Length: 405
Ligand code: ADP
Ligand code: ASP
Ligand code: MG
Image (cartoon, rainbow, N blue to C red; front, side, top):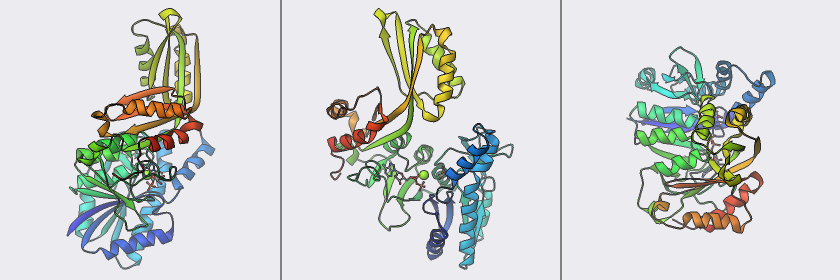
């Protein structure tokens, strides 16, 4: 009997009826053993965050995780109950019971090891094992969460620990598209995407997969099959490169809306200045993304501009303002009205002119580019938030992503 590992996202377990439908589906496949990872029902996690905000805007991270991890406990227990009620055998486990051990860093803890002994014991007893996504436990026995959207990663680490070569991610879209199909009607479903491209798309804001899930799948050569919980269609397989990808210069476009920009002006044009600023930001745990430095006043001073996620903006602004004297700076300006648009494709390595097409397309649509970063297979531009949709749509058209592979 082969073992299957699945993950069902929030919409897929969003009601009692949907949970019962998953139970029916699992029971109809009695020729397999099943490990099922579930997210919290619907928008439960958002509601828990809202509840938290009413008590404290800077909660103790341990208590924050103790709260926002609970949504998954509800859906796991309900799915297990539904299977039992229908005559099947099942057991639900939280992250600790499933043996998912993480670092201490609450809210964005890293999974360090998985000890699936109890899962294996229950599979031996022919039970469906339902595991809470998104949560783990520290070696000191505190509950942690692994970052929003993290249930995908929970499923992939379990597949890796159990030696299963693929993992089905059931969600509310029927695969990975060239861009978010809820925002661009001409987006096209991709049959296959390489790990590297998917990792860039996910890291750059394509919500459909958690970036660490893709990373872990790549490390363990696990094929991810992203598919709809509600339609029987074939979804998208995320796996090693395949030849088709090299024919297209751009595979997909991602958008991250919650970005913010900070500029510190009048800093001296001397060695070590940028190092001092970014070391302090790093010490505060602030992730800096795009950076540009421009000269002012005949090269004597510089302006350094960088982006951070909107959630880190106030802290980053405080830290940067605190560095003004040390850097001899004149002013710090901020803007939270920033989004990042990224084009991704392994084909761009061998095809010249991709950046030129991106910049010209944005220019033709009067979208001003504020910052640029690149990697071998990605070009990202920071733009004004209210031009982000226009930017994505026009790039999707310019690279003809609607037409078939
Ligand atoms: P789940 O709750 O199942 O984990 P998510 O909401 O996290 O689902 O992810 C699915 C959503 O990701 C889709 O509803 C879609 O709006 C969004 N999305 C963003 N970019 C893409 C893309 N390139 N392909 C498919 N979906 C995308
Ligand atoms: N419930 C968590 C969230 O909303 C984890 C997940 O759905 O993957 O972020
Ligand atoms: Mg998700």
